[in-house]
Every structure is written in C-alpha cells, then in structure tokens.
Image 1 (tube, one colour):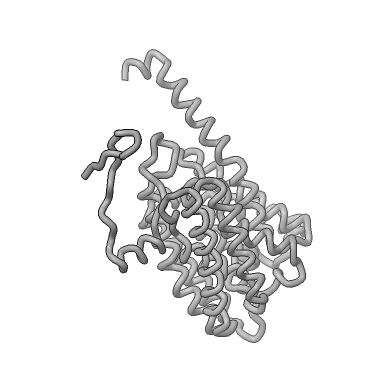
Image 2 (cartoon, rainbow, N blue to C red):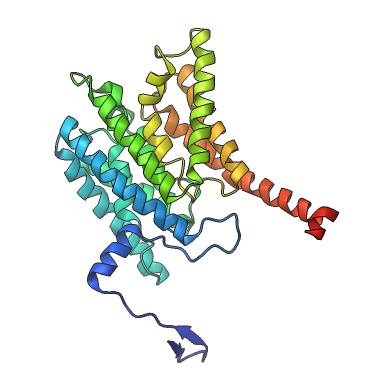
Amino acid sequence: MQKTHENTGTPTNVEARPAALGKLLAFAVSDGRQPAATPLMPTGRDMQRYLIAALLCALPCLGLAAHYLGWRIWAMLTVATVSGALVEFVFARIRHKRLSGGTLAYAALLVLVLPQDLPLWMVALGSGVGTLFGKEVFGGTGSYIFSPVLVGKGFLLFSYPQDAQGTYFGSMLSYEGNPEAWLVCSGAICCAAVVFAVARPANLRILAAVLLGAVGVALAMSEIGRLPYETPVELIAADGFLFAAVFFAVDPACSPQDDEGKWLFGLLVGVTAVLMRCFSTYSEAMLSALLFGNLFTPMIDAIAVTSETADEDTPEGRAA
C-alpha cells in the first residue's frame, strides 16, 4: 500500500500496524535492520535469529543463576529492561523511527555478567549506557561494532571496579559451597552453543576457533607455569570465558561475515583472552578480548572484500 506525501508528492510506504502482542514480540527480538546490502554485512534475519537464540538460552541460565545466587536477579532483569527500553524509546522519538529492538535479550545477557549483589541503580546505569553508547549511537540493533552488553559491563567495571567485580553466572568456579554448580552451568552453556549453531551454522567456526586458540595457548602457558589454573578446562569454565564465547563472540553485528574471517576472529579472541589472564591480574579477560577482537572485525571483512575483488579481476575469475 502506498501513500503520497502531502508536501513532496513522493510515494511513501505505509505498513499496517501489528497487534499489541506482535508489537511486544517484535520489540523483544526485532532485528532492527533491513536486509543487508552487501554480503559482508549482517542481515536482519541473522540478527533476529541471534536475538531469539540469545533470549531462549538466557532464560534457563537466569533460572540457574536465581537458584544458586538468589532471586534478586529477576529484579535486576526488570530494571535493566526498563532502563534500556527508555533509552531506545527516546532515540526512536528523536529519529522518528520504530524501536530498534532486542532490549529484553540484551538486558538478560547483561544481568548474567553482573554480580548479583550489584545495586539496582548501577544495573540501570549499565543498561542505559550500554544501550546508548553501544547500540543507539551506531544506528540501533545490528549496526553496532561493540556488543551493547559488553559496553555496559565495561563501563561499570571501570567506573565502579569494587562493586562490578564479583560472582555472576559465568564465573562458575567462584560458587563457594556448590561444587556441582560450575558443571551444571557449564552444561547449560554448552546446550546454548548447540542452539546458536542451529540458529546459524556459521557460528561453529567462531566457537571452534575461540576454543582452539585458547586451549593451544593455555597448554603452552601451563608448561611454563604461567597458567593461573591447574588445567585449561578450569580456565575455560571460569571467569565467564565459556559464557562470553558462546553468547557474545557469535553476535553477527560485531563478528566477521566472511567464513575465513570467522576463524581469524575466533583465534584472535581466544589467544588474547588467555594471554591477558596469564600475564595480568585482570579476571574479566574474555570480555576485554572480545572488545579487542571487535575492533578488528571491520578490517577483517575489508580484507575479505579486497581479496574477493582481486580474485574476480583475475582471468579465472572473469571466466567463472
């Protein structure tokens, strides 16, 4: 259906408004983007699949976190969702566009990387800052270069280091008095990895590369006595390493779209995370390694585009 603009006379598309339930679901998992214009940009469908998978996998993780750490996590989820939604609403009104979406999924992931005793006002601040500077300033869901969750977590970690460090879902080995907790939570995260692989099979390349790079460096560090854990398995299970790798490394908006680039990105993240953990006292090494890897994502995709263009200019490419 088309409608002519009363001032310019140009036709504009008018879409029927969805029902109230449809609006709610779209707001929770909307991709926020139109289909990609180039092969090396995430499509709206990729983002939607990622957000749906993230939300579906985060819910049982929230349940486990509530069981082991306390029911306060549901209050944190409510506060984070409301804070992120307010920021999205303000930007939507300023831009005269629809909500970019994904707020509930991002809020759930943020709560899972925050200490469960963090003051609620800090939770609101982290969610708002992550939504504002991690997502909306770049154009909304699917357009950012850093995960909004990692931006929010990083802001709190550097602004309030004493409060933002502590036990959270991803730090399984920190559960005192619950020796089985890390195994149960690690199993839930492994199940989430399967879900993400089904949602987007290309995610397996990133996950495999992260683990390959991390285990390889961890074995070398163990030989020289620099590994802060007894085995590489403990390193992967602790400090949110496995959780961050599964839930954040596969975000289509800030990971390479080229198949070979996914391997390079994963190796970069895995190697950097282990080196940071071995040669510093910083326990959130995986989150920093992901932000570091996100910096190189545009360059990796640019190299892939240049390589493909060069191949097309060869006689064999023109013949094909």
